[in-house]
Image (cartoon, rainbow, N blue to C red):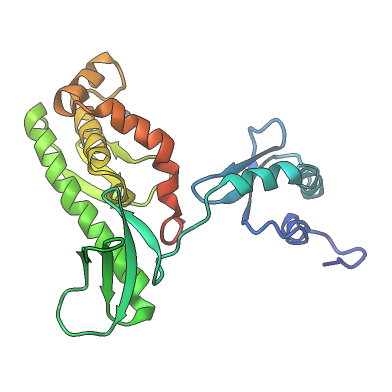
Length: 250
Ligand SMILES: [Zn+2]
C-alpha cells in the first residue's frame, strides 16, 4: 500500500505493507537504551521496544531491516487453534475433538464422551454462535474444580491455609501466590496432563510456607508432589503450546 508523499507513516502502516500476519505492539520505554525486537510465543505478536528519544520512522526502519528474522520467528510459533467445530483440543492432557451440536434437549452444556473410535469428543450444545464461549466457560469450571481439589490436598499435607483461588488467563505465569494467601492460576492448566496442574497447585501452596524459591521451598513441593521434576519439564517443553487454544489472552 503506497503512502502519499508527505503523509507521516506510522509504524503500523509500514508493517501492514509487509503483511506479517501478526499484530505489532510498540512499547515506548524510557529506560530502553536501544531498539529491541521480540516475538511473543504466547500471543503470536511482534513486540518492538522503543527508547524515549527514538523516532517512529527509525523504529519502522529497524523492523523492516529485521523482517526475515521476524518471519522466521513467527514461522516457529505454533498456529492458533480457535474453539470451533471440529477443533482438536487437549483436556487433562488427552486430545479431544470439539463437536458443536447446535440446540438440543437436556441441560448438559458440554460433556466428554468416548465413542470407542477416534478421539473422545467434547460436545457443546446450544446455539453455534455461543458455543466457543460456552466451551471456554466449561473448561474454566473444570479447571476450578481440579484446582480446588488439588489445592485442598496440598494445603492439608503441608499444613498451609490458602484464603482464595482465582482463575485467570495470564500468559506470563501458571500460578501465583500472595503473602496473605490469595492463589491464582491459569485456567489453561486444565489442558495439561493432570500431574502438571497438580504440580502448579503444590507449588503455589508451598509458597504459603516459603515466599521464595530456595531449597526449603522445593523440599515442601517435593514432599507434597513427588513428580515435580517431570511436571516442570513438561511445562518447559509444552507449556507455551497451551496458549494456542481458544481466544488469545488480552
Ligand atoms: Zn514460585
